[in-house]
Image 1 (cartoon, rainbow, N blue to C red):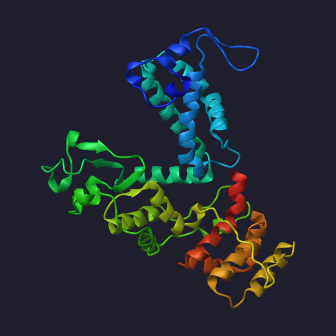
Image 2: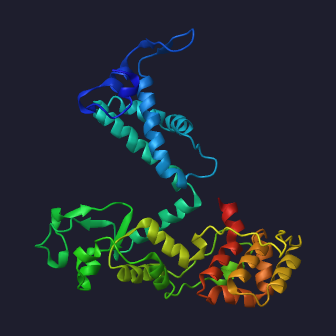
Amino acid sequence: MSRQKKGTDDWDKTKTRYYVDEFFSDRQYDRNGPTPFHKRKHEFGPLALYMIEDQVGKLLEQYRPTLPEGAPDTPRDCANQFYADCQKNLLEAMDSPETENDAKFVSFIKISAEGWFRKMYARTDEGKAKEALRKRMGRDSRFTNEFTALGKDDSAKNGKPTGKERLKGKRGNWGLSFEYLDSHGLNANEYHAPSTVSEAKLETVALQYPVSIDRKALQDADRKRNPNYGLPGQMENMLEGVFNEAKGTLPLGSVFQIVRYRMAVLEHFTATHPTDEDGNPIDFAVDYTSAADAALEAIEGEDDKQWMTDLAEALENLTPKRKAKYLNKHPEILNKLLNSKNPNIHRALLALEGQQHEQKA
């Protein structure tokens, strides 16, 4: 059987041990060049290495949008880094029942590689924010990521499963809990099916809920931690309203997008670079006061979207102390940022905190 064939999925791996036996063998392999390749015992051979690169390469296409800056971005580079990071666990697994045949070994590699990609994403700012959201929902009895097998619990009251009927849902999907639905007379078979409501409509619902902000913390230049956006329970109340409007479950990514839309502290602000009528970039003054004031004077009378874009451009590079000084000098700007429900204005809040995020990271 050729190397290429063994590196693909066209044979029954539950009945073979090519990768496993290769690992425990002490042998030489011919290769192009004057020196043969010698593989010692307890090392992965060419077949396993080919398969690992193949599995990691497939997952790379799936997880590419989540990779942090500077991460390996080719199948070979990813496979090499995956092996370097996970080598100890991979070698230990070869002595366990998890890898007693080729099928189990391939499954183990795939699961390990998925975990490796997810850990890289979890270290990004967005990954940390999404994990914080998951934990907050997990601590609130109104939400769950455990769902029933629809259509298999007809005897359950209001679709609420009992005992073995309750199944673990996908980790990425969330909805209202069985207890919440039961207490409100709602049917779990309906509310634990995927929502068909558009994300745009749910974002509109989110804007109806208040999010209080600590003004003093926002203006405190010496504060090391970022201020909390929202009083305790405000975000959870907002999500309760969103899930009720959704009448179904939502992927964690959709929930995060809705929260990010409403609470700008969770959104990575990407400032645009305004240009003049000739297409030349606008060069703001270096001094923070003149830069901010020039922006405000130049954009007086423009619509909110352009106003906020230019304001963010002027503020994004200021130090926290200078930002606080500017906000104290212009309380009317802070009031507009805090009181508006316009998402374009919300996004400028992150411009006021951008450098604190960078320093913390």
